[in-house]
Structure formats: structure tokens, C-alpha cells
Length: 396
Ligand SMILES: Cc1cc2nc3c(=O)[nH]c(=O)nc-3n(C[C@H](O)[C@H](O)[C@H](O)COP(=O)(O)OP(=O)(O)OC[C@H]3O[C@@H](n4cnc5c(N)ncnc54)[C@H](O)[C@@H]3O)c2cc1C
Image (cartoon, rainbow, N blue to C red; front, side, top):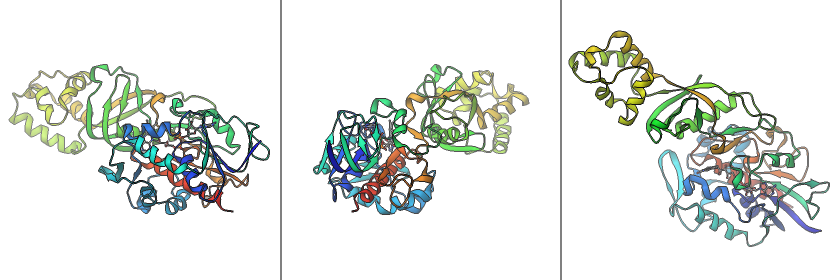
């Protein structure tokens, strides 16, 4: 049987970073079931890798589901510490999203992999069991283990819901996160259309951002970010069952106007521009390629002149501009980017990321019950917790 100080299970960003930190003091083996490291990392940011978010730590922490737990990880391994591992620069884009100047996730992966010189890497090694005394698959024994197996979305990257059993820890409900939504209505007619900077709502939850229509439903940052709150508020656990869903999200198509503003504007405009056709008038509020669909849905004829529109229709128009509803039948699970839920943080020490139930067992990355919105927040979790777990496990 081979023996190591530390075995790290999973060669994604969390596992790689744990290996970099732990190998400074210890004899480390990294076990990855794929034939290469970081498959999901290569897909991040559309292949450009939105590696982190550059907000000041105090502000940044407020975007996660458990800021107290993450505090120590974030202060132990900062964005500056992360950037110092690369010999290229990072560029800040809108909303403090950071990307490598080379715009390639593959450059990020290559630079990190180069830091693994002192780490034994076993590819194609699917960890199926961990037995008494930290024996892995009956062939490798370690003094300590770091589990960094990620979540359960995008199984083609190596993630799998059965990995949670490896943790031997209490788990929270496992749910889809950062997910597009499937609409009951077929949206082929408007597939590819984007609504810019609209407000999206589900019950009392709101998100702002672009919404993009696909053939099967809604996507884009506004929807993706709102999906976290939707998923959290629905009672289901993928370890036990798939969610039975039917709910509504609505889009405020004119977030810069209140209903009263629209009432006043319409009252004035409908008098002055009485001969204008409704479908042309709406161009100031809606993208052209969306107008026909919108008018069909609310049963109004776009060829009507403004002067021909009665009060009831005008009110229907205003109501739908402010609250245009879509009935949702499911999460688009194949495209959910992250997992909500995981190893219950109540049984993990936030200062070391060691289990409080099993000494010598550590956790890093998405396998933990930690998540954030889109914008570099989830890789931030992976890198910072990966580093802290590696550092703590490596302490003699
Ligand atoms: C399409 C897409 C785009 C994204 N873009 C961004 C972005 O731009 N910015 C951002 O912050 N976040 C992004 N994310 C989220 C981010 O990629 C993840 O949160 C992050 O990769 C999690 O890192 P991890 O190391 O914890 O897990 P993973 O990256 O999932 O790595 C886990 C590794 O463990 C291995 N493994 C699993 N089980 C076993 C086992 N039993 N034995 C051996 N090995 C095993 C897997 O093969 C995998 O290599 C994106 C996600 C997706 C799907």
C-alpha cells in the first residue's frame, strides 16, 4: 500500500490549490478521476475564466450564503495572494469581475498545474471508498484527507451526486444553483432575444440583469442569479427526489419607470402622438424583436393607433410592462452551474476546514455548503478554501 501525509481527492481549482499549499510542508498525492485536471475550470467564464471578484473582502463576503464561515479563508488567502501565483496580469471588468489578461482559462489551469511539481498526481483514479485509517480504494493510505470533489452539476466534468457519500459528514439539502429556467410556454419565436438590465422577480426576491430567451426558457445573469433564491426557497433535496415545480417569475420590462410614470407618460403621448402605431411607439421601451411576442401575449394588436386604445387596454399594457409573467416548469438542470448545499458547515471548523467529527478529514470548494452569485464568487470559494484546507492539513 502506498503511503502519503495528505491525500487530496479531486483535481479542480479547490483540490489543486489545496495541493499547492499542502505540498510546501508535506508529502501529497492528488487523486483525480478524469485523465486531466480542472475540466470545469476550463469552462469557466465562457472559457475566459472569471477567476475571482475584486470587491473589498468585507463587501465581498456579503454575497455568499455564509459570510462568517468564509471570513477566515478569505483573509488567509486574498485575491493578491491568488494573482501572485501567475506571471500574467488580471483585468477588472464590470461589477469587479476579474479575468486573466490572456482571456484563457487554459492559461490559468496551466500556470496552477506548474506549481504541482512536488505533488504525486494520479489520473483516472476514481475514489470509491475511504475506509478506517484513511485508506482509499484499498490502495493508498494517508494521515490526512482533503475532500475537494466539487458539486453535482455538469457531470461530464467529473462531478457526481454519489460523491457526497464519500464525505461521511452530515449534509444539507442538495439543490441546483445558478440555473436557467424552463418555461411552460415554447419560446422558439424569441430565442436569442436579450432584454438588457431588467428587474426579475420571484415572490419577494428580486435580481437585476440581462435576460436572454432560449428555445426552452429563460437564462442570462438576471435569471441565473435569481435562481439561487428560488432554489433555496423550494423544499427539495436531490439526494432524495427531484423537485416538482410550477411557479412564476415576472420581468419588469421598464425598470426606469414606475406605474404612475407610465400612466402620466401614456396619457400625454397618446394624445399628442395619437396616430402612431402601438408597435412602433413601444420601441422606446422594448427591444424590437420582442415587441410582437409581447403584444401577442397580452392580446393587443400592434397595428392599432394610440388613439384607438381604450383605457382597459392601456392599463393592461402598463401592468404587463411592469410585470410580465412567465410560468416555469423546471430548472434547466443540465445547465445549472453550481450546487447549492453540501457538507454541513456546522460540523467543519472555519479556521482550518477540518471536520469537527473526524480529525484529519478536511473539505474544500463546492463540496461544502457554500455558494455565491455569478461574477467570480464561486471560484473565489474554491481557491480560498482550497488554500486554507491545504495549509491547515499541512501543519505538522
Ligand atoms: C459552465 C460553468 C461556468 C462557470 N464559470 C464560473 C466563473 O466564470 N467564475 C466562477 O467563479 N465560477 C464559475 N463556475 C463555478 C466554478 O467552476 C465551480 O464553483 C468550481 O469549479 C468548483 O471548484 P471545485 O474544485 O470545488 O470543484 P470542481 O471544479 O467541480 O472539481 C472537482 C474535481 O473532483 C474530481 N472528482 C470528483 N469526484 C471524484 C472522485 N470520486 N475521485 C476522484 N476525483 C473526483 C472531478 O473530476 C473534478 O475534477 C462555473 C461553472 C460552470 C459549470
